[in-house]
Image 1: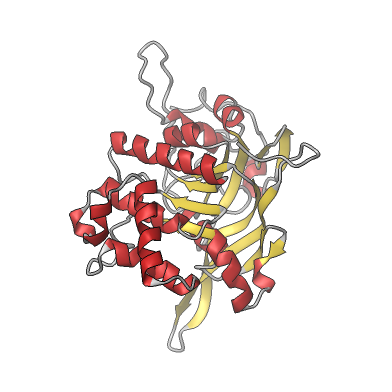
Image 2: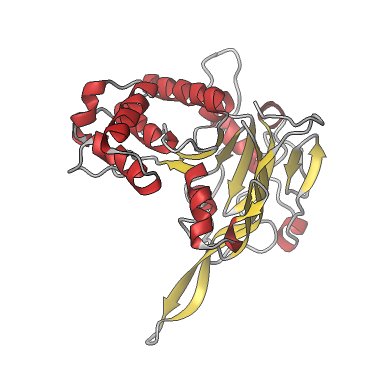
Length: 338
C-alpha cells in the first residue's frame, strides 16, 4: 500500500527515466566493439513509497539487469536513476554511500551470495563494521535481533551457510538486506528456488517487514501468480523493453498487450470449471544484439500486421495508471492463437 502526502498524492521514492544498458560485443584482431547486446532499452517508471512493483517477463528480457543497473551494480549506458528526488549518477562516491544504505537487494540464490567459510553471525556483522562505528558487542546484539526479526534463532549465529535449508538461507539474505534500515529493496527472484510452502512463509515475512518499516519493493519474478498476490503494480518487460504497466487487478483482468495476455494464459488454474486456452508463442526470443525492427514483439505476435513490422509503438496511457506499447492494445489474441 503506497504512502500518500498531504495532498493525497502518492510519494515518489524512485524514478527511472529512459534507462539503457548495453553490453559491447568485441571481435577481430584488435578486439574492437562491433555491436552491442541491448539488455535494457529505454525503460522508464516510478515506484512509490510503501509500494511493491512487480517486474515480469521471460528469462533474458532484462529484469535482473534492470535491477542491478538501478543499484549501481551495472554501469548505465544512458538514462537516469532518481532516488528521493536526487539523481544518483551525479553524486560523488562518498555521497553515494548514503543511498547505498537505503537501497538493498535480495538475491535469487542465497547460498551463492554467502561466504561458505564464514559463519552467519559475523557475515551479517560485516555490514555494521563497514557502515557504522558499533562495538563488537553492539554488532552481535544487533545481528541477534535481526535473526529473531526474520524468524531464526540465537543458536543460528554460529552456524555456516551449508547448515541451513534454502528457506532459512533466504531469511538470512533478508536479514542482511534490512540491517541498515533501507527504504527500497530489490527482490531478484527471491522465492523462485523455494518450495511452495516455504515461498508462502517468505512472502508473508516480506509483507510483515514492509508494513513495519514502510519498505518499497521491486519484485522481479517469472511467477505471475506470486506477483498477483504480492504486488500493487506490475511492469511487463520483453526483450529489454517495457510493453505494459498497470495496477495488478487492471493488468490481470484486462491485459492490453498480446505478450501480457500470453503470459497470463500460462498461469495454472485450480478449477476445472474455468477453462482457458493456453497461448503458446511461436519461435524463440529474438537476439538482443540484433532486435527486430518496429515492435520488438512482432516476430512472435499472433496479431502482428505490417505497421508492427515498420513502426515501433509509442508508450500510451489507456486507463488510470494503465500503460502499454502496442498499435492494437486491448485486442484479444485468444481467437488467433492455435
